[in-house]
Amino acid sequence: MKRFAAVLATLSFLSACSGDGTNPFDPPAQAVTDASTVNSKYLFDRDENLTVNSVTYDQAANELLINNLPFDGPSQRYEHSRLQNGVDVYRSIQTPTTGQVRSYAVFMKNTNAQVTAAAGQTWAGFGYAGANLKRSAFALPGGAGEYVYLGTYGALRNRDDGPNLEIVTGEVRLTLDILDLDNTSSSSETDATIEGAITGAIRNRLRTRPDGTAIDAQLPDISLVLVQYDPATGSFDEGEVRTYFDTDERDTGTWEGLIAGPQGESLAGYLVMTGTAEIQNVSYEVIDWTNPGTGETGTAEGYTTDADYDRILAMVNAGVPVPRQTAVLPAGAVADGPARIEEVRFESLANAREVGVFSTDRAPTDLTPLP
Image (cartoon, rainbow, N blue to C red):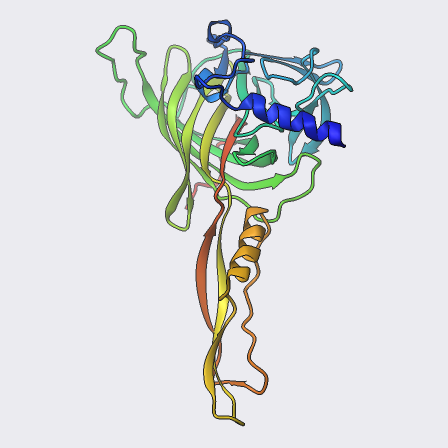
């Protein structure tokens, strides 16, 4: 146990910066490259530790080979761990001396594309992660012009206050319009021409610990803000991602993807976003009271003390839904009327980064339109 704790401490140190703002154990920056091609797209940002640059699915062994995540084992192989809401979850292979940072991946595959996201579990800060999209063919769909795509979302979510990785899954609905917006030719020869429109949302985000233990406090829907695509490649880039708590913005980030299939039958994409790790509005009772025996009056509240704050914040920070806090009347007191309900917002000091992928297929043409 002491040896394992020492390993974690060492890995946390390695993930932090040295005096010049770099990690001396990182590979040289020039040795880490974005391996994206027209049919294989990577979420790659060396400055943000998004470093994955090769993904291969070994169908015979049902294993993933993922390159360029530190300390995930020399074989770079990830074994199948479980299935969560239609998303296959994999984990890096460990031995007594290798694979010191257990890393996890989510994977989905259909006829036209496969998508993968991966992240390490035990790092100070968000750690190392990445995502990849692959497709077998590409053409724009022809016909009516507007299409609905339905599918599945899988992600890894890391906090910046220690090892606390989560597996997130959800449902995706996208819409593609190949007629609008009009083709926009750039004034720069190096910039792609873009046209059309893609937008959508990810709903019913459920999250678990890596072992499958459910986390009860759930996450908000993700808005995938409208983005245009390059008609020559079917690639779309730098779309905006947002989530909200009540009406306040919570997470922000970007999403990108590929149109896939010989008739544009699929849309595949990845996203990365950051925001406050945990937020809850906690309600509590406020009751006016009178003691008939003494004539004393007062007000009892379900949330008043520093101890209440510490207890509630600990629950919020752990992703545990906080029930309404009940007011306790003094001995001999009776309520002057029904309890008033007030509310206070609790936010964790930690932030979270989510790296996710989605895979969708074109829906039937008789799908019920949104209201």
